[in-house]
Each structure stands twice: as C-alpha cells, then as structure tokens.
Amino acid sequence: MRADEPWPEAGRRILRVHFLGMLANEDATRRGNDIEALHDMRVANRRQRAIFRIVAPYFKREAIRAFRDELRTLAGRLGAVRDLDVLIDAADDYRRPSGVDTPSALEPLLDEWRKRRATARDELLTYLNGDDYRALIQRYMVFLSSTGAGVKEAAPGGPPQPSLVRHILPAKIWRQYGKVRAYETVLEQASIKTLHALRIEGKRLRYLLEFFSELLGPDAAEATEALVALQDHLGELHDSDVAIGLLRDFLMRGAQPPPSPVVADSVGRYLNVKLARLRTLQRTVKRPWRQITRKRFRKLLARMVAEL
Image (tube, rainbow, N blue to C red; front, side):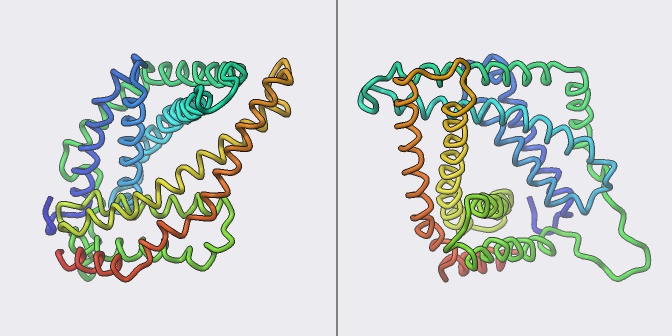
C-alpha cells in the first residue's frame, strides 16, 4: 500500500486480504470441529463490512450493494453460532468442579443453548451451500481483482477533490477519534446500550489504524493496543449482558418444562455471578478509557498522520 494510492483502490486491496481470510476459514467452519475457525471467518467478514463502510462513498452504490448485503446476511448467520459458542464455553468454565458445587445442575440450561446452536449452525450451512451465496462469491472475486471496477468518476470541470490515501485518511482518523472521545460527556452514567455504542465507535477507529498500519508507522501498534483493551473490556460487558438476559429467560419463561428447584437454584447463582461481573465491568470501564483520552494517545495519532 502507498500513501499516493487512490482511496477506493486501497480499500479494494484491504477487502481482498480479508475476503481471502474469510474463504480460508470456510471449510473448517463447515466441518464445525474448530470453533476458532468460525470466529476467524466472522472477524474477516466484519472487517470487510468495516472497510466497505469507509470507502463506500467512492464507489457507485449499485456496484457494491449486493456485496454489502450478502456480507451482512452472512454476518448474522455466523454471529448466531458464535454468540452461542461463547455462552456455552463460559457456562462450561463456570460449572467445572472448582466453580460450582453441582455441575450437572446446569445441564438443562446448556442443553437448551446447544439446541439453539445446532439450529443456528444448520441455518448457516444452508446459507453457505446456497446457490446465491456461491454465485455472489464468484462475482465478488471478479470485483476485488478488477482495478477501477465500480469506482465513481470525478465530476468534470470542478476543483480537485481528495482522492488519495494521504488526502483522506488523516481526516478520517481524527473524525473517528472525535466520535470516540465524545463519550467522555456521558461515560459517568452510561447505560449498557451507550457502552455498546462506544464499543462500536472504538472498533471503527481500531480498524482504521489496523487497515493502514503499514503506512502509519510503529505508533499504530501502541494505539491499537489501547483500543483493543477498551474493546475487550466492553466486549466482555456486552457478553455478560446477553448472558444475563438469556439466563433470566430460562428461569422465567424460556425453559420447557420449567426447571427443577435444584436447576433453578444453580442457574440463579450463575445469574448472580454474571450480574456481579457486569457491575464490576461498568465500574471499571474508566481504566481502559483513560488510555484512549490521555495526551500520549493523541500524540500517537498526530505522529501517524504526519507519516502520510
């Protein structure tokens, strides 16, 4: 990648890298014996959707709409399985002999989640095996290999517009940092929903730095590390909140037949553990947040932009 490269072509280059990463994990995801392959496929999908969001204004809408729609659909299928993998693994860890007195009491809960996962996995495989998905993958490969395909043409006769990486990336980095920094005005009393929104904005800044790290110099790694710490903290908070909702659903109305007193007691204790962890994560969110708002972080961004 070069700083004087056209912005949409830099985007196409990044898309191609993560598209190939997604395909590399497809076979293992189909087999289903390695949950990390599905996770990696989901991450590669997410990063393609992120770069499309960044470069979309420079492409004709009709040239990329089908790709974005299909990646979004695939993300939903992958996410449905992955989210349950995370829930099941966390509950398994909790119920090990060192974690709970009656490990088997959580089995009905895990059985329900495994059934949901099996259904989600069947839906994923049906989608991956569908003709529409396979045909779209072929078209997508052609698009990613064709320089200039789908790019908007500059309006004739007007003043020159930012078009190269070095014209566009600095403003995008600072604008996205501003979106993240804006949460300092609400962080003290932030709701779970607000913290999830912060996680999304932080992830978008992280992706910008990762996508263009080879142009931004060594400071990109330090800045990215701080963003990953914030994202991991907020990600665990989000996972805890999802688990709490599903545990409450199991106890109140989801399980058929209703859980026995022993099972209900064990699930209730697990729910209390998750609630306590959620409160701790809410209370301590300022620890990773301070790394993002300190002067050192802003200097890192400034030096990266100066590289361009």
